[in-house]
Length: 216
Image 1: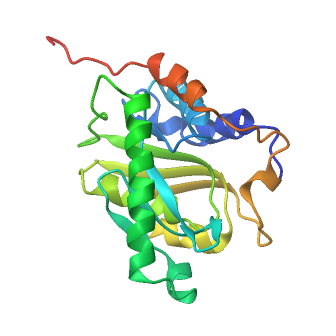
Image 2 (image 1 turned 180 degrees about the horizontal axis):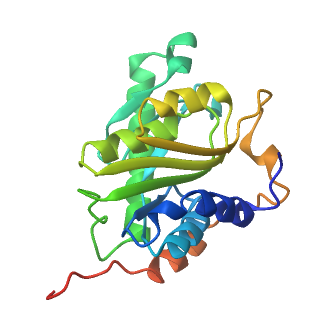
């Protein structure tokens, strides 16, 4: 299955999430590519939009190959690739520090005047355009689980079955539109997989300010 665009994939995911319409769901996009998708899903469900900041840890000499991921609190999830490649603890430490600094810069850019929206007690939907190893999504789900959402859902367009299985162990519900056995990269399943810029993410988030409780 190939998608015309992220927007088409987001609309298809929103249809499958319709049961959560009007339930004040918190829809979190993984930057940058998934944020426009999260916007579409949040609008369709009358939900609230924010980002969850995680970043993959790249393999030595192969930065596009994820050996794990780090969240903005500094917690690291290491996948099977780290062990298979014999990655040293020193390398993981250095890569963690580099990516953590990048996440801190991104948070300062995206939401400079507020804290992340609290997921406690809410239905939380974590959106990504696609999954390769699952490391980034798993790191996102684990950091959110620690903040006690009522229900934690992972929603994405495409992933290999092995990654979907790993993610199912971390989420209360998983929605994946396509699970091809032959999988090289997420972008091969989209006709339009144009890069999403930080400026686009900032514009989307600034157009979706957090709701205030009555009396605030």
